[in-house]
Image (cartoon, rainbow, N blue to C red; front, side, top):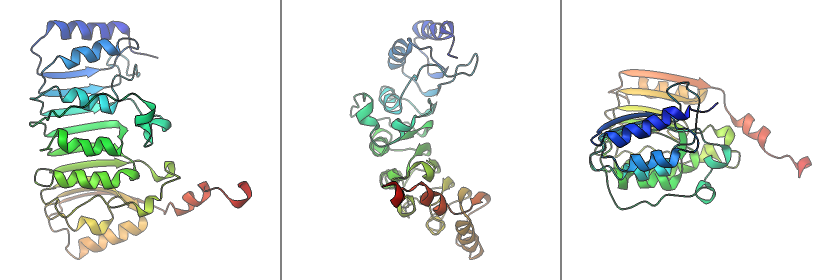
Length: 273
């Protein structure tokens, strides 16, 4: 199933007629018309942008309208942009990994900055390390951030989050499930949280990218959504009992058994070598 081409053609006509659009909610794109649609988007001067890979008419996915790098490139053209909420087409396995830049053509990024961009949400697609490191340069005063990444991006995440330490108030990071990263020692991945994040009030994250002990460095944390293993739950409970999360008001957690056995099962045995 694909998006109805009449829907996308109507979108293009409307964008041609409405020259002064400041807020746009765009759903889906028919295959073969993505180039025209992206050209229209590049001509706008938006304050608010909401995109979805799913068609408004039937909710089936059409063309991969924008890759994450293309989205960032287009955002650069909007000097007044304040909020971006994008639900892109799901990554394929070969695109999720770090060699995405070698597989797909990358748009040219300039030195332009979005000095008004405060809320950025990129869903259903995983950013790689270079894209994550680019974000603070593009949008230096982010207050609310929601993205997806793999555990190989933890160092890049930590560096970028540190750049937003004086502004970032809400953070939602979905880390790709470790079972997919069979060649990455996810248990030894660097924690992404930093004591410099003194303004952070809302956090949705998982272990081991944010082990429980790292949460104690967030003095203003009020809302926490956390997933991890049973041992993480015990450690988090102890932190709360000891009063090390003094500002915490709302807690949502989900814990499961250790994934060590799963990782071991995926590793090649001597008999297979």
